[in-house]
Amino acid sequence: MKIAFTTASSTLNGELDPKFGRAPGFLIYDTDQKNTQYLNNDLNSDSAQGAGIQAAQEVIAAGVQYLVTGSCGPKATQVLKSAGVKIFKSDSVTLNECLELLNSGKLTEA
Image 1 (cartoon, rainbow, N blue to C red):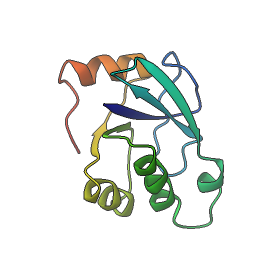
Image 2 (spheres, rainbow, N blue to C red):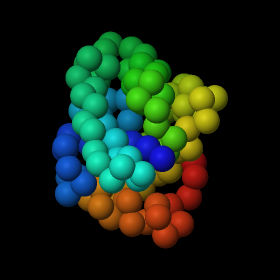
Image 3 (cartoon, rainbow, N blue to C red):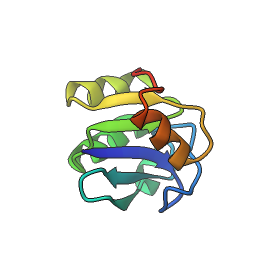
Image 4 (cartoon, rainbow, N blue to C red):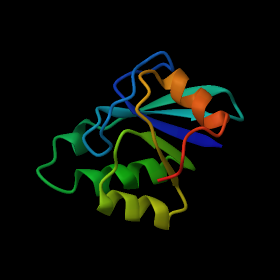
């Protein structure tokens, strides 16, 4: 399973970014392979409009099943959910904390 976190970091030690469409990027953690991949979101985060929808399409194309973020707009949420991506909101500081909360079932699906 692939989990995407909104962040500017390329490691799980980084901090969660509170926004989805305007996040600097996404750290994608593959729970099967136990590896990470950083997906840059610069083109979408600088867009005048539609940043959330474009970012959602990028995350879907990367094969993500779960997204952990601080907030996700209604249009991006609709695109993600229609593709089967489950969205979890968190106010945790680090990605490791978010991952632990997700794994323990302490994050609720948005």
